[in-house]
Image 1 (tube, rainbow, N blue to C red):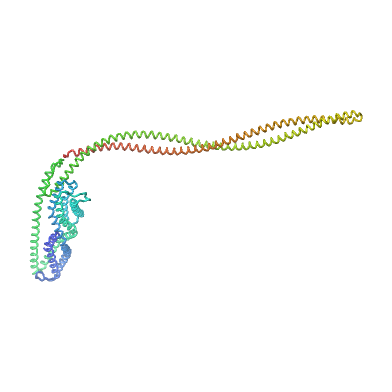
Image 2: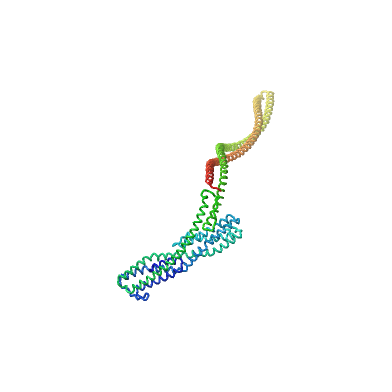
Amino acid sequence: MLSQRLARGTALASQGQAAAFAAVKDSRERFRANLEALQTGGTVKGTSLDVVQDPAIVELLQGIKARWDPVDANAGRVLDNQVSLTTLAKGLASINAGNNPILELAQQAGQQVGQSGGSLREIEYANQLAVLSQRIAKNANALASSDEIDPEVAFLLGKDTGTFRDIVNGLVKGSDALRLAGVRSEDARATLNELAKRFTAYDAGVAAILQNMNRLVAAKQAARGVNNESEALLADTTRLAEAYEGSGKLRVFTLWAAIIFALLALACLVLLGKVFLDDARVRAFESEQENKRNQEAILRLLNEMGNLADGDLTVQASVTEDVTGAIADSINFTIEELRTLVKGINSATDQVTKATQDAQAISNRLFEASQRQNQEIQHASASVLQMAQSINEVSQSAAQSARVAQQSLAAAEKGGQAVQNQIAGMNEIRTQIQDTSKRIKRLGESSLEIGEIVELISDITEQTNVLALNAAIQAASAGEAGRGFTVVAEEVQRLAERSGEATKQIEAIVKTIQADTQDAVAAMEKSTVGVVEGTKLSDAAGQALEEIRKVSRELAQLIGGISDQTQKQSASVSEVTRGMQGILKISEETTEGTKQTNVSIGQLTKLAADLRSSVAGFKV
């Protein structure tokens, strides 16, 4: 019976009941003392017990001892956490005791904020206070009654507590984080201050629960361990009693043990029965009253919300002090928000419909413009390709012209060199003609000297003829004596005649030579003049060829530049062509995108109509 009393006592102690700890301690000490007396001998209630010698009983006692040790340890853990468990129980009691007053104050604050013309955000946060208070109480009781720590519930409990505190402070003093400026109503401010004051004890209870959660779980697990072993321990002690009875050694001990166990069992049963009966009566009465109020409030709320299921957003739930008061207030706020939302959806669908119609028209125009743009780009691309082909042909012609210009430049340079050579030759010819002219002049001068000599010879010949004539005359005069002289005179005369003829011939030749010399000199002078003129013309031709060469060089450079520019233009046109192809591709993609946009706009129009029809059943 001590094992059963210990199990029930640890269960109540884990719930923080102070009276249960004394029962647990007493049961633990008694069981330990009785077991020790049975194992080693001793005195129990004035009865002396000998050391057990029966092997079967010793084995049973050892089994009971092995089973008792973990039960003893678990009971010790429950007793060690007495302060934490009682503190947690007090905190939970303060939460449950302050739940209804805090709920009433939260509902009152929400009504005052709404009636005083508070903003939608202030009203929303004020209405959240009632919901948060109920959720805090629910989660606190859930944690206190659970054998394990639910991290999500513990986190939500701490978060809700902090949120409740922040909202109250924000509504009273303002909060940048919550974007609250603080309520202007003095009544609402006073209610919120009272709510903050009441919540201090509430917050302390939550803190006690959160701080002692590990100890609570350890104590509950220990109590569960005691409870799990209590039945087995009871069975072992029952077998031990039967063993004592069967061994015939019970004697006086059996009587005293039976009396002790009977008295202990009776006391435990009376104590536990009273505790459980009182607790059950209180809980049953409170639960019955609470359930009754909750059912009435829920039925009233369901009746008021009947038309809401049909889409009537004009209904208004009654906000009372019952548990559904905060729910009704939240439902009213939700209905108001839904009403605003439905109105906004209707307005938005009208605007979307008009906008989609406008967008449809614009998209159609854009689609047509894109098609025209594609055609224009295709024409422009064809023109650019033709221009590129023409520029390539011009580039080829310019390159060929550059080659011809280079050839002309080379020919001009060769012509200039030939003219220079000709000028040099003409200068040499002029020099030779001048030399020849000088020689001919000297020949003319020599022929003049010869003429003078011939004249002298002619004079001598005439004188010789005269002398021969005179000699003939003298010979004739001399007669026979002068006959030989006559022969000489005749020979001299003939010689003189021949000399005269020769002189005449020479004179004629000299005159001819002189005439030819004069003609040659005149011709030479004319040739010299011609050579000089030819040299001048050659110089002029050389200068002209030099100009031609310069012009040809400049022309070659210009044509080369034109060729380079045409090549660059050809490359640029190629880039433009590729760019036009890219633009054409982009334009085609734009056209396709416009087409898809047109389809999407049509779908959007249909969706807007569907959205409008989906909210058409709501009455606002």
